[in-house]
Length: 288
Image (cartoon, rainbow, N blue to C red; front, side):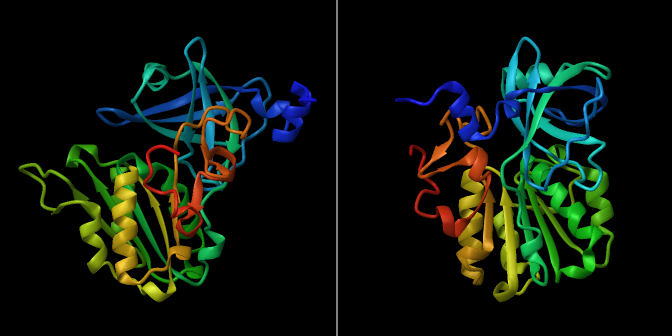
C-alpha cells in the first residue's frame, strides 16, 4: 500500500517544512542592473531563521510563485536574513519589483552547506562566478570571524563586466586586508577597467596556496565550475578537497517532489553543496 500524504511528509521531514512564514522587506539594495540584495525581518512573532553558510531558502511571492534562493548574509546574525537575487524568471522578476515594507513568504533553511569546519587548518580557495559569489559570502564572514583557524584564504572572483561586480564595497575591504588574497577578473573590460581580463580559471595557476593542504569551494555556472575543477586538479588539489554548489531544478526543497534528483541523491536535501568526489561521475551531464 502506498504511504498516505501524512506518512510521505513524515518521511521527507515534516509538513511544517512546507509552510512559509511571513517576512517583511526591511531594505533593498541594487547591486547591478539585474541583481539586488534584500534584507528581511520576521513578522507576526516569527522566530529568527538560523542557517549555515551555503544553505538556501524558498522565497514565495504571493500570487506569483516560489523560488529557491541562497542566503547571502552572515550566519552569526540570523536576525537579519539576507538574500541576493538575479532576475532570471517570473518569480525573481516579481521579487525585484517589491519595495521596503512588502511581505513575502519564506521557508527554510534547507540543504547541506559549505564545509567550513572541515577547512580548519587548511588553505582555503574560494572560486566564484557571477551571482555565485552570493552563497559564498557567508563563508567569508565565518572565516573572517575566526581567521586564525585557517591558512591562506584566497578568493578568486570572475564576472562578465566591471558593471556586474557584486558587493563592491566589501570586495575592496577584503582586498585591503593583509590576511586575504583577493583576485578579480572580468570577461570583458571597459575603458576605465585596470584589472584582469579573462575567465576566472586563468587566476588559478598564479593563486598563492598549497594544493596539498587546500580545501576549495566553487559556485557559479556549471561550465565555469567544470573548468575550475580541472584547473585545481592540475595544481594538485584532490577531488575530495573540492566542493561545488549545485542548483538544478529544486522545487519542494525537502526531497519530496523528486525534481532535483541527482543520481541517488536529491540536490535540495543532500546538497546543494557536494564534494566533487561524490558527484564526479554525474557532473557535467545535462540530463540525468
